[in-house]
Length: 446
Image (cartoon, rainbow, N blue to C red; front, top):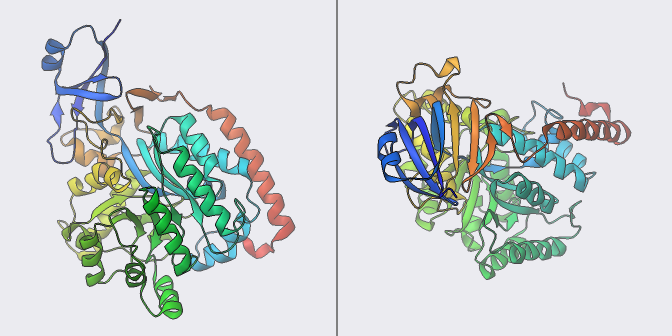
């Protein structure tokens, strides 16, 4: 019987801080990496292991999509070129009032296929009917921080807020020891959740030692609305409520003042930067260089596929690097190494998965394999910058989570792609029927 697995590759990139290893190899037992070295070092030390040769391949830590709304893949392209509040209140919320449980399940499956092919092993999600997101994620074999979106107004998923809190409590209790799924308490925003709702969420999270996942200071309209209602900016309001804490995952953080960045860092808050969604919705550009300089833990996210409109973290890495260089007129303001860290180890820490994000002994064998045969990846002088500036979704040949292949030689092993395509087309027709029956033609803003 084989003791474990050895992967041999042209390159192994263990983390953002460690130089790429030429002719690198990994030894894996069970779900964990037990050794990293050259081909010769690993093969001479470990015997009776299954050997997989990944010729012309780069092995690197699985990418982390630290914030998305995966089931919104079914709403991709349904409302475009609109500001956030218009997009959300005039289009998305009304359509979501007709949301069905099975739509969420199949929409998540579609998103998971895209994420797997984008090299993602771990993601963060907030949406409705989140138990269906959990079911699809378990079947696909990925890792995730998941939470039911909570609002003051009734949800098509659970009805009144109190039932949403009870549902979250049930999820927290049911998944407290799960090896791949963690549950977050997920109040949507400070403009859809009252201070009383936020306090209830904070108490629930505290009782279960759970993360809190919230959108924060996404655009100027949000800030103005919170100031109008409560007389304070979002960060100050959350601080007053006791919400700025180490278990808080704050998404977007586009409209932050310098003192707010310092306060978030002092409180140990985790942040997710979603540059492409922020750009597409006209929300602005988050002060990423200042956040990193302050010592904040920052992950990288796509946001939902209805506002991005994809789940490609390679694209997100490139955009995150380029937009800040251009905005500040300084090519050194943010480096490829820093961006890669956001998409791997920092993203994992932001989602409270501290044993993944690096390919080092003792870490989980969560990894992705980039196929260097693709012409835009040649020549391979610098594997790390290839990943940040040149790689794309679709260039990933293999994906592993906890030492188990989820995709091998471009074939996803855990999801039937043809079945998902078939169901998505059926859901599209259902949604078109609802739009035609319930909404004015102005919903088509193309």
